[in-house]
Image (cartoon, rainbow, N blue to C red):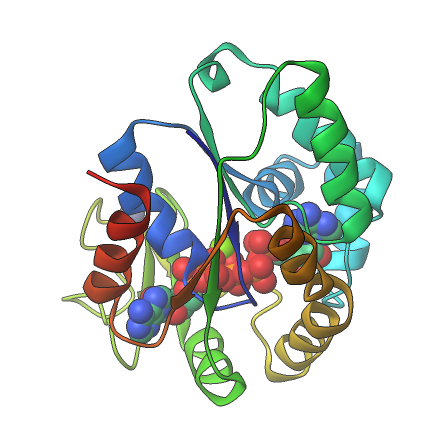
Length: 214
Ligand code: AP5
Ligand code: MG
Ligand code: ZN
């Protein structure tokens, strides 16, 4: 199963990805996570990506495509994958289609998760992420049992550098202008499913399972 998670910042792509990979046993590939790991390790790629990410702008297409396709060539992607946050422009989608076609594959389903702007803002400004294992919390509606501490591994919780009010606003604008056109792109391809992302995470997941099948 070759899947794409589409949706604005804060729609719950990462949250649903954890549940999807657990159920369907496919690797979770988040270009945002790959960049953040590179920033943490101080690589050249990380330095380049950080310039854009801190402003809430998109990292240049060719750089992202190179990273994503290299990752898709790894062995664990043979029987499927879940892309989270890639593609994000029509150019990236075309490059992905070319790449998959070359390898005799295709995108099976695009899960387009929609949430209103006000809710997205609240979710991102209140998000906390575990430094050690990456688990996601929300101080308002999904707090950890102990403030600042990860329930799963005891790691320290932190705020993402791009989760400030100004940057979140810009990320949503960038999504609307550069990523929204992808909905039409996949609408034409006939493989998109629209998911209401504002109904609680278990309900969202149940809807996704009904689309993908048991
Ligand atoms: P990326 O890391 O992909 O971030 P994003 O798309 O902005 O999305 P987020 O990770 O912020 O949100 P999410 O949808 O995963 O939500 P989450 O599950 O955490 O990209 C970051 C940056 O990297 C980009 O800005 C860009 O610069 C660069 N980049 C990455 N890919 C690129 C590409 N292809 N091209 C160019 N540049 C690229 O949930 C959010 C919050 O809501 C959490 O607190 C969670 O607990 C809560 N929540 C989740 N679900 C629910 C629910 N159902 N109900 C209530 N609360 C919920
Ligand atoms: Mg995410
Ligand atoms: Zn943790």
